[in-house]
Length: 84
Image 1: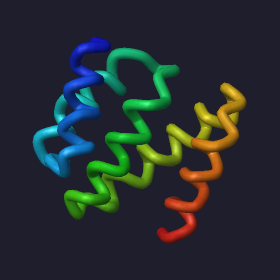
Image 2: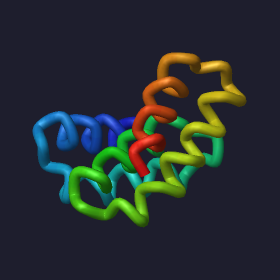
Image 3: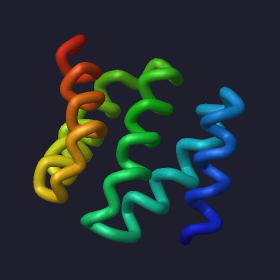
């Protein structure tokens, strides 16, 4: 799963958001507590025009960020979600 996450992240970083989405979704689905693929999945979906699908994923990522005491990702997610 870490390889798939790295692939999804690399695709996202290269602007290949549509191609990154299935890889990041598989990672997010693999573990309920894995925050990072949810963040990238939500951001990739936003970039791909899937705002409605991205919002619940980003909200779940925010809950995980808060629960896991990741302040910087929580701040970023709050900023993204404020635009909805």
